[in-house]
Image 1: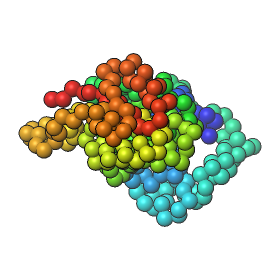
Image 2: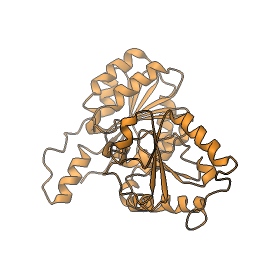
Image 3: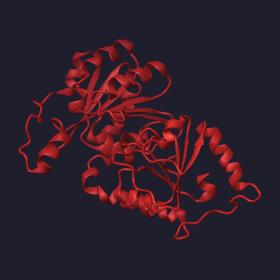
Image 4: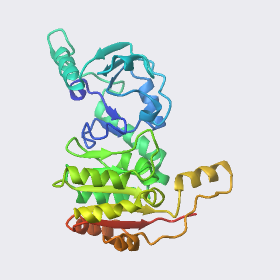
Length: 315
């Protein structure tokens, strides 16, 4: 549908990878971007598939759309939640999109590629991706090289579990490309600290032949770090990549931005790799993207969990 219409595609966090994020029309997880939100509000029509269009989906209040909103969802009640549908399509997403595509290309349908204002949707998508990245380049640059290292090692069908951590929602969600073969599991809407490790254990137990990697921050990890004992017992290869900024970075940054003195957000230093070894697993530090790639490669063939800590600078 996107290729037929020449329509850029963006996803919610839970929809990450449903369209290959390397596709030239993909904007990935970009609904939080002011540039992308402004572009979205100016479209003649928006096709929203399987999303509540709620704050938990979008990271912000739903945008005020100027164009026609077409919603596709199994649940008829969703047509009037968040942003009410101008055109409601109640049904399975695959079946509905297949039928819509057939109508678009049928005699009397839209047989030509639709064009946006600049007559080049691929170029427009590239411009929007660049604008999204520029908005947060200073903040996100500390994670992107490491995330590229992760992507370079993992298979296309790898499962990545994500904590409620800056390295995940600012880093991996928009900047770690994923396709339909893979899975990205994130605690969307709940801000659940400590989700990544137990979720990774569950994913690896369910799919032992697939690569599974947990991404976390040091603060979130320590909510459920004792689950390393379970991972050791299972003896399944499970890398746990931890960006260590010495506490609760998001809350620390919010306090500083308000002009408050950061309080109760700094944690006493913990040697997390040594803690993993104490549980019976493996542990190491990675001080560069190349070191992370090498450690991750080794961890994926080592029975049991391997905690790879990446020290971050702290204020």
